[in-house]
Length: 192
Image (cartoon, rainbow, N blue to C red; front, side, top):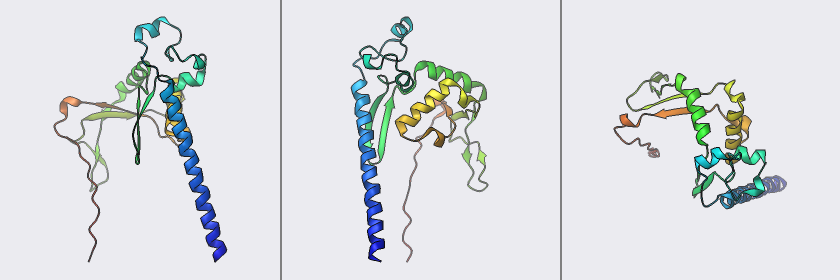
């Protein structure tokens, strides 16, 4: 019995040390991104006039680095909101060209977003949802721009690409929003 406890304790120690090392690697990665972020973003005019569309000036150690282009190193600015729970806002995650590309693919296929009916479990239209959305297909996932976006998502979230879902594009109609959406989680009261 005592040897079983030692094994469990050893496994827990191993997992804990692994999690600490992983967190340190993630912190080092975020600090490297913060260090790479210049004091100014390049203007769109300057980007169009130059051949290096992805990297701002001052990031010479990433020149001609295809992975740096895909990850938009030097552009993406992480903002740590909270470590517990872990919330990190990634400013400038998509380029304007990528946004335009996603809009062009999505626009013809946008459908009104639905909510789940509690009785039937099916999606129904509701005044609560003011957005339209669509998911990219498995075929579209093979497009180079989409692969680049998914690789960036994988690296920044530290979740393997194969574990990711299809990219969803949402278009919000802010003119129809009439109230604040609030989600409340309550703990059940203990039964007596």
